[in-house]
Structures are given as C-alpha cells and as structure tokens.
Length: 284
Image (cartoon, rainbow, N blue to C red; front, side, top):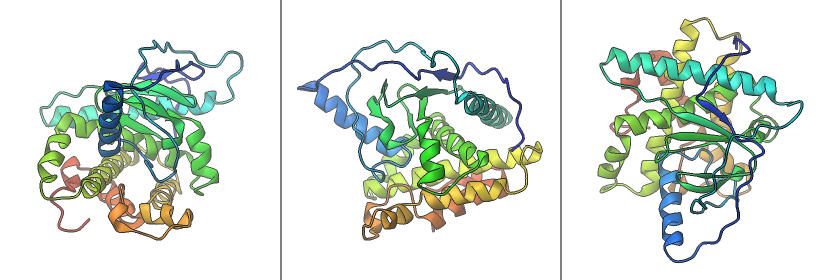
C-alpha cells in the first residue's frame, strides 16, 4: 500500500506504556461490567470470545495520559502507517457523509499495551481490536498485528489497514443508528445473529474505504488479496477449527470466512455505504 510517512493525526492517541490502576468489582460495578461486555460484544469487539482470555471491568477512574514508549520506538513506522490510514479512512467517510448531507464526528484510535480503561470498562489486549460506542474510541494493542501475521497467516500492510477500517466501520454504525436497528431486530433474532450482521456490515464499510483507496491509487498489487486473506483468517468457522473445536454456527459472532470476504468485497466493488445493509439482506 502506498502511504506517506510523517502524517500528523490527532485522532490517534498513543497510550502505550500507560499504567492501568488496580480495582475490584463489587455490587453495582459488576452490573456495569456485564453491560459493558454486552455492548462491546454486540457493537464493536473484533475477534471477541474466539481468541479466549480477556476480561472487561468497570473503569477505575484512573486518568490514563498518553505515554508513548521512551527512547527509540521500534514500532514507529507502524504508528506512522496507522496515523496515515486512520486519517484517510475518516476523511473518506466524512466526505461520504457530507455528500449525503449528514455531519460526521471523528472517532479516536487509542494505542495501548496489555490493558486499558475505556468507556466500556477495563479491557485487555487478549480480545483484539475493538470499538467502544460510549466514548467513540477504537482501541488496539499493536501486538495484535504480530498475532494476525504469525498466528493467523495474514501478513501485509493492507491487512492491517483493513482491521482499522473495520473498527471505524463500527463508528459509522454508531453515527447511523445501527444500534437502534439491531435492538429492533433483536425482538426476532438471537443475540449472536445480530452480532454477525453488525460485524459483516463493518466489514462492508471497510471495503467501501478500500474502494476509495483504490480510486486514489493507494493500492498496490496484492493489497486486495491481503485484506481477503485477513477476512478469511478471522472468520468464526476458521477460528473454531483452528482452536480444535467443532464448528457451531449458533455461537458465531462475526460471520464465517466466506461471509466476511463476501461483504468486504461488496463494499469494495460498489464503494457505496448503502450497499452494506446486512440487516435486510436475504442471505448473509
């Protein structure tokens, strides 16, 4: 992928190295935690529950100030890449909203290490990248990209960009009211079915950004294949097989590999947000 190093982007907040204060959960705090977990699983967590580990707890009230690593940062090229991609993703979606006469509110992306307090409670890097609707922030521990490359066999910078665009896809859902529509659908569907629709729509929105990036000549040979490989690698059926479990569609939360590829391609081929209506699709 073609990109420009040194891009300034205040929407990327570097909190790597920040400490998360200890805290326990009692009484009402536990209730807050349960709500936070449900919100995160339904409306933003990527790779949730399928990688195992990770707990979410109520915010401890700690003020995590940005604290990037001291001295030479081995991940600086990756951070620069993330800043470029995040700016292009949000500029693209802001332009699409403007064309439709809708205001766009920019999300933040927080880089963290191991654990962090969020508007959805305390979160661990074990659950992977995720978006928190209450604070309109996406979160990622950069170690996820090593996991994506080494464990899931999905290398490449466009695969990394796809992950970011997917999370901002969840931000679009927040702005467009997908949560309310999902709740209405929930009267007739199981919770995991709603989750799959939400996740596949975010994949489609990521594809819409990919279409725009291609139009700007940012894509290079093999980039689209990198994104499709990543989508395949993190399908629910693929992850369950990889973990040695029996494939059980009733437990899917993000969609099969084929579904994730199909909806990313739909966004990529059409370049239209309107094409990403997974809630009304006859077949996912």
